[in-house]
Image 1 (cartoon, rainbow, N blue to C red):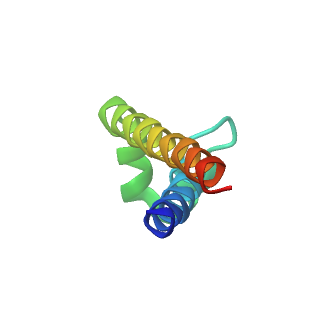
Image 2 (image 1 turned 30 degrees about the vertical axis):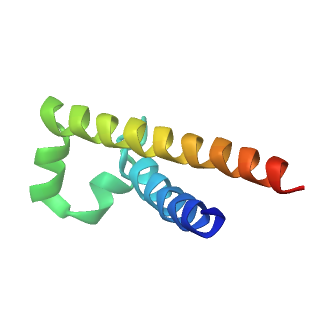
Length: 78
């Protein structure tokens, strides 16, 4: 169980890093640099930004749950 939660935590951590870097910030972020004109026209869309926000929140929730689960498992193991 600890190994499974550790793998979920690592995957969700990497996914969170990618999703946060894709967000459009004040300077445009990596989302405007990666795809050129086609991607920048899509990233301005509110639907794409909203879906990116939802995915980031879901990945953050999975990461938080895995951290809490690991803490509980390690506390009970000791």
